[in-house]
Length: 114
Image (cartoon, rainbow, N blue to C red; front, top):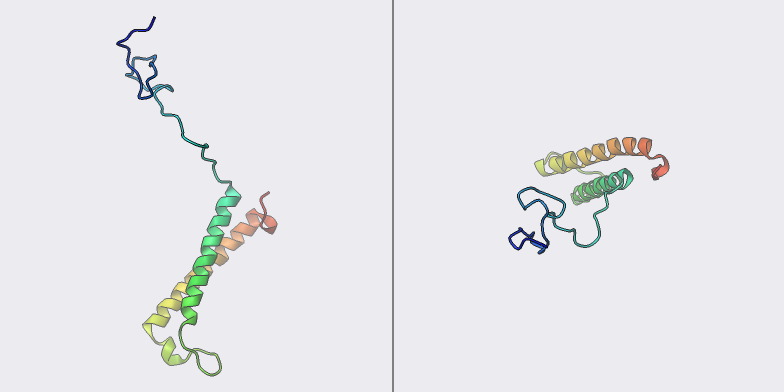
């Protein structure tokens, strides 16, 4: 029947090709459910959420700076390198979100998959 010297894979099954070549019987079986590829809409929505979170975070950091009685940031604060860095990060995050939104809503009108 079977040759006892015939190689086996690590599951204990006999290999048909002698074990020297890769075959479907040598490939381990996946455990659990197969991984489902995310749709383009789901990927885009995840990017949008990440960019919105980044913009909210940089905005919150900018709001931590003191404001004057009229609600405006004093010039002395605006001259500090910390405020300038926070403002630049907020402007960059807003620019990235605005650019992404323009592409997102052209690809997915009304924010829904086609």
